[in-house]
Image (tube, rainbow, N blue to C red; front, side, top):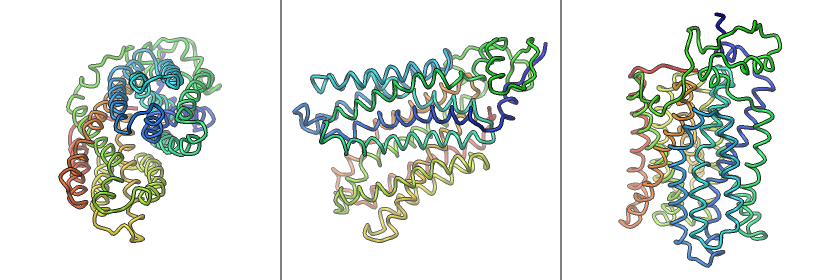
Length: 442
């Protein structure tokens, strides 16, 4: 029996056209995922007006989409670990693309809300599936950097949804965002089919004797030595093919690790949802800063967010994640408190705002990257998807604190000071994880 180590083969590959192609195509999927998920919030007033409804009527739509995203993270994402990353990613693109296109024909806001819930099932799965494909195609020495680039694409999609909506909505109506959000994911399908191979690690864990693996290896490296009797394994040991099970992320000593990561993701995404939804309102109601003025600072701070995502990937290729990520979240808590005390008109405020965006986005990107590092390929999409699902529960709960702070006339200092406890808790959880036993997977 001639064993062929897939992990070693992938890790010794030079980063070239094949890896960059996977990054570009999967990065485009991440971009559109971010575009579609955050598009609604950017054009909500126009949608409400288009249906003759008051702005507060959009609350039901937001809840429906959030429920769909949470269910999709828990239900659809794990299917990639059973049926394949590429196949399920193509299905997800086709599904949320088609439903988004059909949404332009909704006759009532209720109909649109239900369609967004269904689309959310598949939108939630796009990111973890794309990240799994990138992680399992890229050599370990560049893996975190490539994942960070894909996450930067996701963040850019969120920003682009606001920019495109602002340019087109007055001419073509709210439907313009849905046309873009539906057509581009469908165009990703032939790109995935033609240029992105199914994960070698997924195939090897499913069936170590899969004959299609040899064909893919030869396309990646024409000089690879294969005799035709290989058994494809991950690592130096002989591993039998394994079908993914939902329980895998809790077995073999992973239960505590998974629980800690879920708690960290829940708190991290609660913080993101809270500040994303309420920070402009906090400054308007508590510091008398008009939303329009704050929006300019937020647009500049977006540059810090992209830089943070890219930087965290570079750093995680070089430093221990459970030491690095806590420092990021401690810094995030410090910038949140600083935003409350530094005068808005001060030149240093925008510097702190950029630092806040850098750490907010970089911290969550670090958690996502860390998950790809410590879970084996057969359960990687499940681990990413379910951690994201846990985080989205926090996204549903976060607005409650914002509404209470406004209703109780909290000061800006008290509001952000209490909110800063959340990233400190994330830092403590990840630090604790570093003191428990976990193994790095590739």
